[in-house]
Image (tube, rainbow, N blue to C red):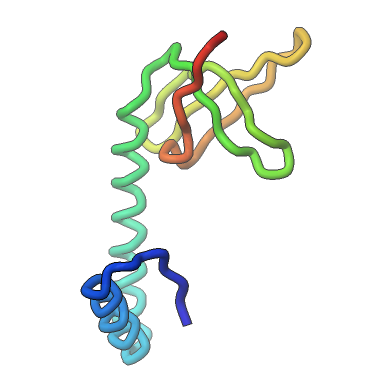
Length: 107
């Protein structure tokens, strides 16, 4: 089944209805739903990137590489470029999901 971190009963009922509706869709209907989800995700990325400007210090989780802290060098419509300096070495990161970025305090 699906995993949701929502505790409210009315929202869970909504997700149950959505789940059952999806399970009864044909292939064309599923493709339409997938297109809608991709459009929504794209808009969320665009909205998130508008929260940052060049020069902001940010941090994000890079998985096995740990938490990366750096300065924003470019803000695109759906991604953000972050420059990290480590021991006189510069590493550039392209963050495709700006919603994962958090403002970092510079000490």
